[in-house]
Length: 370
Image: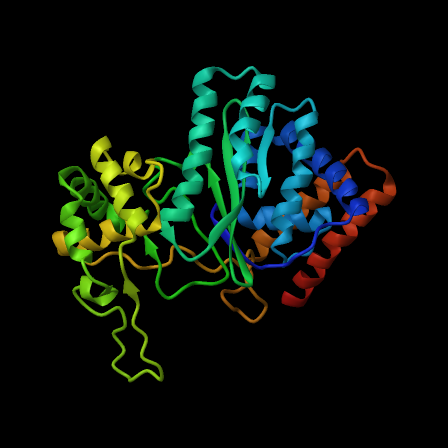
């Protein structure tokens, strides 16, 4: 099961009331059916899969290629909070500051113990910090949600950059260490040329040195940024190995801000024991993490990983073989699962018919690919 990201064009507006009402009913029924037939674990595996989540949103009735699919699907799914299911959802668009309180209220209704509550609040906060600060892909989070039960949790959050949105998926079973490739498989439609990915396993040593630099004395970091520097000054080789002359000469500068300096001084006072504890420090943002990474590269003598962790996000390939040939067995299995789920729903015939008609559009794509 793949979890990760999906890139979508950023659309404004909101779903009309008549559509949202039906999306809530269908989302609630499908969730109950999946849990009854396959169990909680299977539901969390599905919801943390960006491909299945996208298909699910389409079946509910939203545009397949819109960033709004994420926000409306999560809003529709939150209807299960009022159901007998022991699965709850906190968060949503523009509600990051309310998520912690929502988790507490929902956990209280589920009679979760203090340890479980504390863990949920921590992973909710840290997953957002990781995707906003450690994966520096220029997408800033504006939507965060956490889906949880007594045994499992999944995070779905979305960032925006100009006219595009990127969605990040997390699954509790896949997180071995929150700072080392916590996404078990990151997919995206757009791959950027250069991304500072401090969650990469190739940057483990840079993480360790970053902690050492802070605990030793951040003044050693400040001296490297006494004046404005280009990023190429920190690397052993140029990022672009193509010797053709570019049409435009672009130089990226980096200067440590006053806020970043203060955050690093605060970290020095706290003396974090590892990288996870370091990034958890309030006020430590992208600039501070980037500065530590660049200096650790000089100390370690090994180039940082600047590879975007995102990959292509096509669920089943394309009929022309781009980016890869259609995996017909996977395609058939996905469609059949959704089709059988819809048929078993406790809805009236017209609502089932509308859901099947939306699924039929996917079948049309499949028939063209064969």
